[in-house]
Length: 198
Image (cartoon, helix red, strand yellow):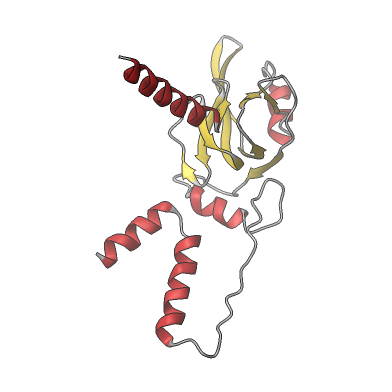
């Protein structure tokens, strides 16, 4: 009987340490997630993220009454990039009551990010803008291009240079190049690559 208690305690401690080793991001109902770390969002709340740098793309969407009619507000796509470790984080958005508040928010979003202790957390904020008609946007591709720039909230991926030593064979070079591009690929591309070689 004592052995089972010890096993149960070990399992619970392992599970709880895993829960504490991640980020929980809590969002208000008006925040509609579009992308989370370069993947289409599943709109979970709270959102479970890995420790380190994280990036989300979202819209502020809300319904309000004006002159007796329901009016829907949808903001531009807002990017938020922050660094977090082993904590719960909370995003707060303002309640937009007037047309001028909605316009002001869309032009200059005011967002607050705090940790579980109520301490304000620093973050970078930007917008994923596209001119013209915006049906069926490829947000993943747009974000990938955005992250190659030095704009606010971009991940600013450093470029790597592959150097090849003179004494390597063509097979060695090809293997190194495959390793390099595999490490840069997203999960979907990695799965497609694995399916191709099997």
